[in-house]
Image (cartoon, rainbow, N blue to C red; front, side):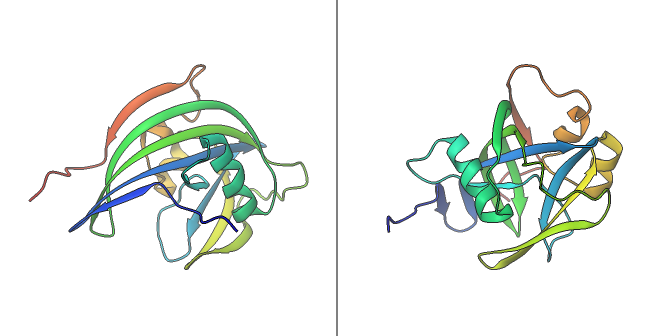
Length: 170
């Protein structure tokens, strides 16, 4: 088996750079989200890229690992230089957000948890949420600019730099 190396750089004491790829799947005017059960916030399914794979390969691999299904990856929506704080660490993330399609057999319910999975140390849960700004804001889904754009996705890929709070060294 080939050693897998995630694209992640740690700099002491608390700074991290990583590359993350996520997908937005839509069904019945809802979008698929997930969270680790110990966290309050939700996010779009995906994960960290590994050395030697493309962003599309990352998304496909992550969905097989997390959802147990092969997805079709559609157009790239956003490339985001994302700066945020998580668990008292300052993160800089290069994020790729794609539109994706899950197979027709994938479960749907407008409000219940539809899938659970163990991913490393985390228990993940997945659900569909209305694809509206109000619904995403209510669930606290970072990066927060997506909530403002969910009802009108970009027609061509957008690049942006997103700062979530003040991350200057103190």
